[in-house]
Length: 324
Length: 115
Image 1: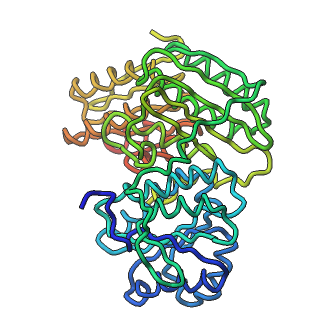
Image 2: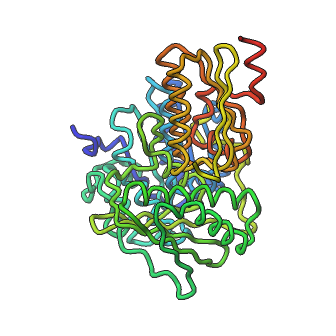
């Protein structure tokens, strides 16, 4: 079996209509593991945690419970976190409930979360893990639910698991690859080459200051965007274009170059050996959303960083699952 | 030479302390790599990279740190970092690299204790 021809148990979409069906579906999935004292992790939006916790009662103790609003704010951080869980529970079967798509997420975020769902089928070919992803049938658009059938080999309906007829063998749903929107007319742009990285960092810091980001966030942004411009001059020939603009509540950067990122999991696997792979990892962990469009014609990477009252992650925390 | 980057080395017994300042990025990292390689080639048993004067470090700098760590590991020697500014710490933690390394507040901690 190759990596993406998954057994249907390995990655299941749970289509639920209400809280009762949600609870039944999650408990059907986790109870056998809890009965055998096998590891379970649950990453769902905070209101769903509040729904689950009283039902779990004493059985919650060994379960790793995570707020998906925080963990999955940038869907690009979820696979790294789950890889960390797999590493921690090495040799034991792991059950993971992950709900990265909820009603009310922006279309950009849902596209990247759907990409994440597709990449789950490629991310851990050797690992003993089953994944259940709840989908709110009542609240989500039909297109989102169709994509869920594309990204999951198994679908649970009415408490029954069956194969998805639309499973895409790990391919990203076509809707996720539609071109990024045009930058607004007021967007600033700078063409850059290898000698410009330092000047660009100063320029990025100015944009961050104009957006009202504090010193820590400015530093994070300079660190992240510098990784993108560095990748451009390192891998993609001689030059690229860096753009920046603001949208309500966020500052956006976009790097465009002629390179092609071939590995769909780039930035989601931490590679401390070798010569590359750290830069995109850093970008995913420093920005609130990262949109990547890459093909033979070139690459655009657009980052979103929230300004103002967005909740801050703990200052010294590493990525979930990486710190020991 | 780059005026936004400096590197100085001094030896104490079998230890080499490589102190860098300024910005460690795609352009300046090769120079550090060369100096660290030279320190190992020169037979140092302990190589300490002092990052206290570094204002900015990117993934290219991290790669240099990782390759020095690897070299020390493979040749049965020791490699340590002297803690840098917040940005440097953040980058080391974010990538899990910090967990792999010995990190101290000042080179003297290792020099007086071990050499």
